[in-house]
Structures are given as C-alpha cells and as structure tokens.
Length: 255
Image (cartoon, one colour):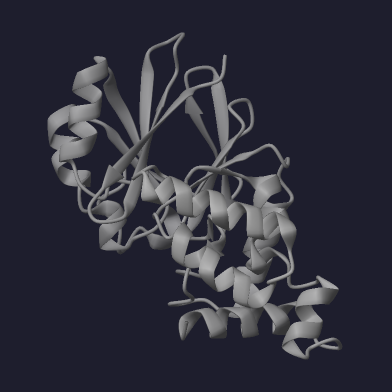
C-alpha cells in the first residue's frame, strides 16, 4: 500500500515531508528545517517518528534534527559523502542504497549540483521523489558547490523517473520561478497556464508543491535545455545541452 505523504511548511518558505505507512504505522521524515511543526503534525495524527532522511547539509534542512531525535528517538540517515557536515548519522547512505518504510523500499539517488553531497529519495510504490533543492517546482537549486554539468546530469536522473512521479521539493519558490521561466520560454502554453494557476494558488495562501514530474518536463526551463525554442531565444542553437542549462542557471542567478 502506498505511503501517506504529509507536506509540512517550515521556517519562511521550507517544506518537510512526513511519510506514513498505513499498514505498519511506521513514519519517516524527509529533512528537518525545524522541529516544532513536525512534532505538532505527529501529535495531531498520533504518529511515531522512526526515521529522518536527510537530503543535504544546509542548515535550513537539518536544524531540527537534534530536537526531533531527542523527542522521538528517530534514526537519522544521510549521505556518506556528507557525513562530516551532517548531524551524526545512524546510517550513512551511498547512491543506489535502499531505505525502508514498512514494506516499501525507497532508493537513494545521487544528485550533486546544489551541494556536492546532495541526495534524493525515490519511493516507486508511493510514486514520489523527495528532491529538496535539486529538482524544484519550475526550478532547480543554485549551484553553490557543483558544476552545471553535475547538475544537468543530476536532473537527467530525476527526469528519467515515471512522469506521474510526485516531485516533493524543499521550498516555496514556485511563483518567482514561474516569472523567470516565462522569460526563457514565453510562448509555451503549458507554462503560461501553470503560471496563472500558481498565481491563483499563492493568492489564496495555498502551496504549489509537490508537483508532477510530467508537468516539470513540460514547463521547467531547467529540464528543457534541448528545446529548439529555448535555444533560439538564447541564441544558442549550436550549443550543448549543458551550455544551454548553464546559461539558464546564470540568468536565474541574476533574475
């Protein structure tokens, strides 16, 4: 049976995610920006937290770990490559490793770019990928540590997942991302429609994540570096996909 996913707003614009297996009652958390909202959500539902999956080391994804560990006794899992700058890990993960929630096995995906040690978690039965600051709704994370080539390869791994995959990313940046995306591909009707919907949702104070991978493939400029219309608009018809992606990322950084 697929896990139940609960999206938890944290800090100013972060999201954490609870996964709950209805058969076994097991519950896991992906990222811990702060402890208060997570503990409140657990208490409201009577869930007991057993595991915390960390995507990367940035403070706004790990600051709540120790308080949650103390309150719940949850085990903490994160990338072996980042163990030196993550909270103490009970299990260090390598790309391709499995993580278990009840009877479902999730897979660790290596997604460097935003940081070198960034990982994502894909749960095929539930149909969800927890991508944090790699693939985001209409965007991708800023390249603080990795190269454009690394991030493009990381996004390619995520883009290869089934199109109905739920993309559970780490921030509410989608409205700004939509405004930028329209500067890259203004004639894309799917993007135009999505931007209108995003504006309506945010006007009502509603979240715009998670999103569907198929929607990202059709509208997210960071996944669309090979599109002729984008290449023509950027004057990069003969460039490589990585070069086009790097130019899109450069423009977003100064947007």
